[in-house]
Amino acid sequence: MRLWPRLRVLDRYVLREFLTIFMAALAGFPILVIVLDVTENLGKYLGRELPPLDIAQAYVYGVPETMFLVLPAAVLFATVFSIGGFTRHTELTAAKASGISFHRFIVPIAAGAAVSTVLGIGLSAIKPEANQRRGELLQEKKARGNFRSNFTFANEDARVFKINTADALTGIMNDVEVERRGTGPDFPSYTMFARDARYQDAQGWTLRQGFIHIMPNDSTNIAVSFDSLRDRNFRAAPAVLMADPRAPDEMGFTELGAFITSMERSGTDVNKFRTARMLKVAIPVTCVIIMLFGAPLATSNQRGGPALGVGISLATTVVFLMLVQMTQAIGDKGLVMPELAAWIPSAIFGIMGTILLVKVRT
Image (cartoon, rainbow, N blue to C red; front, side, top):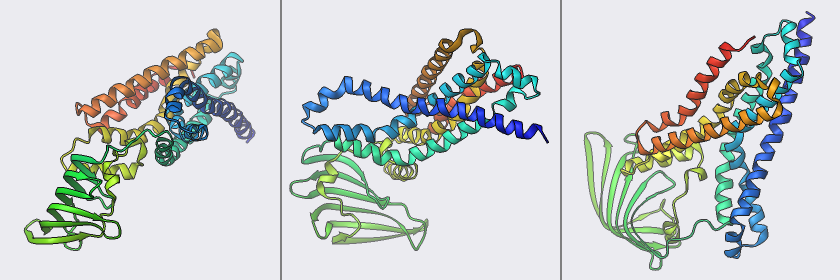
């Protein structure tokens, strides 16, 4: 009965030390990234004649993305430096002498890493909108002009439009094909083709001289031709069609999934989107895995001191980021299933961490 209260005090102490370093690293990395980005790109932003306030706001909107990407590194630094400190000050040795194993000792740190995983999932939900706003403030995306040809557009209702040509000045599209994947007779699949379409502000797009194939089930195909058809759910202005498509980091997990489904129906290669989508989950989960890898290594800090801790953390972070880039390229090319490629770095560090945890002196 006396041991449990002492363990609770120890847990709080270990968790407090971990979180102190974790929060410092999580706040410090974005500041470092901002300083480096200002040094490299401030001249470019000023050359666009951007207001200084817009530039400052853009950096603020970029913080969630940076925090999301550096979460595993922040967890690793906090793990290595907290456990390294416990080792150098013989606190870990004292805990072992009291009958507390190394595995039990790092449970609060594992809990802190799990909290960082939840934080990562939360950042993953808010960063798409922040990234989009940052791009707008920095004018990263510009219209393609007033004419565009041979492109695909995914509407908000998950329909895919294949468009031969579009002119924003006249508000006219030519050779428009529309696809929708249905679920049954109440919401049937259909494909539609129109020779051209014209845009009217209040009414949206009117498709002319075409036909539609309605498929309520696998054995039924109803074909109907039309002179004109008003699409009430397609109201994207011509200027919107000219803009660059949203990047994966500007879409959430669910939205990106719907976008992938739409693009797959149009025959577009979506491997890079599938990899990016799974990384939205894999990176936060890696926080726990990287902690399991770093904790046994941190026990070697007694002789090397803080310098060795910095070396271990930086080397591991660089290797991890290299693995992420390599496996993302592999997934994008389709050499490995994209969803599997996103988990390869976590799997590698998970296996190594498990081996190190088994071998560490408890």
